[in-house]
Amino acid sequence: MTSAYEEAWRDKAACLTVDPEVFFPTAEWMAPKAREVCARCRVVEQCLTTAIVNDERHGIWAGMDRTERNAARRKRKANA
Image 1 (cartoon, one colour):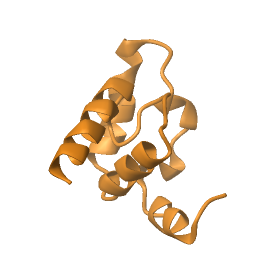
Image 2 (image 1 turned 90 degrees about the horizontal axis):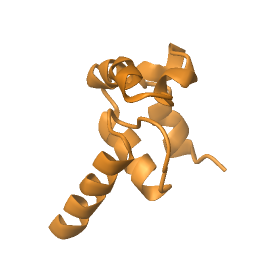
Image 3 (image 1 turned 135 degrees about the vertical axis):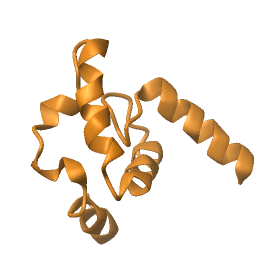
């Protein structure tokens, strides 16, 4: 179930009008297109938080792949 908070930030996401397949690349060379969209997004922090909270294991979220999100999760935990 999606919360009102998630719906509010998602309405401002740069990816809103981009084909979702872009964010689930089948090869690493395809990831830069998703990262470009995320780089210009004004709600990238909310996206990252959602991906971490929901333990998203696939795709590009907030311009990060799974390995990068795991590092961000560890960094947030260390700084908490």
